[in-house]
Image (cartoon, rainbow, N blue to C red; front, top):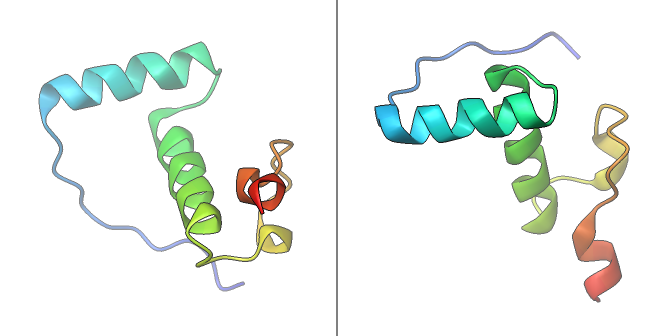
Length: 66
């Protein structure tokens, strides 16, 4: 992999505060939480293979729903 792509994200301050609290509750940075949320959503939508994740211990929920 060539590395991670950076981009600007505009988010409502209340949503950011909720995201920040959620990230802290799970001992992640806000950036790490966003990556986790995006990876999970991509896998659940069938847009990303579960085997390509970065070693996250949470399994793909959609595998058990089929």
